[in-house]
Length: 419
Image (cartoon, rainbow, N blue to C red):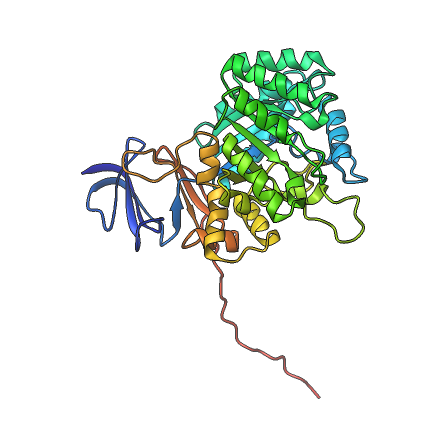
């Protein structure tokens, strides 16, 4: 057998011991122990854990890395929306492209090779951010697949221009539509309009939803009803939904089953939710993170994602999903291997399923492979394991070799003491 590349001594799920992965024409030709073949190139992964790559199902590339343009005084959601709205009025296409490209490069080198980014489209941002992100999607296609979600961050009903602009974006390259009922003067009508545009263009929907800590203040029932009415099961995702963190187990079980039955997926954003929620509390401050692991047990498709990086929503970050998974597991006080393995799935296979993407290492499948400095998924999450290298369709996209400790032998030489 002639192949282009063999990755030797990899640790992968569902295969005992170390295996080799043979790649030909961008596809996986064979997986097995000590593959004998004629290869143009070989690399020894030395026991590194190999998998199809991290999947970031919720990120905002357009407004990343703008800390120097914004003020954070109260650290509230309202302030973040206001400060970002003010800043984005000054965004240029070149500016957005440069910031987004820099963050995409970081994400790739942290092992992410699939991503869904929201892009704000309204009279302040115009189409500038959207045009920039389309260029990023094209220019980095060699390393990462990017879905673009045309996003109405500041509502629809109070600003009809936004609806027309998003309609145009869906005609000219956006992959899906994003809504934000809690910023709209008429949340129910906002939901209706988002579904109408989605059906018009036959695209999926991803809502920012219920970003508060009051279970009574919710637009979730309206989204569930609209999903059922429009026959959109399996095509709707909700992000944040932080008020679910305040429910008792019995109530959460009822809500979770309703979400699962409607075919709605959930993405939690640990860094942002921790930073913004609970600002009104001076003690016993709630974490504000929806319990994705408990909801997954109820049948809800769940994911963990980055959301924002270095802006008023999240003044931290580097687009590392290994770190985000570790943060979620730590805050949610998880420890059992089964729970930790699920967390890993929520930044990989489950996130890919939400985005409608394939995610496996299988003969005949795409040779999209990332090697991590760990032995298995649990170690990845527990240790925030760094990425070592990645391949997209069989071509190497990045390399970050293991660091080496240089042990220097020294001799003890004490200076002579006179006198």
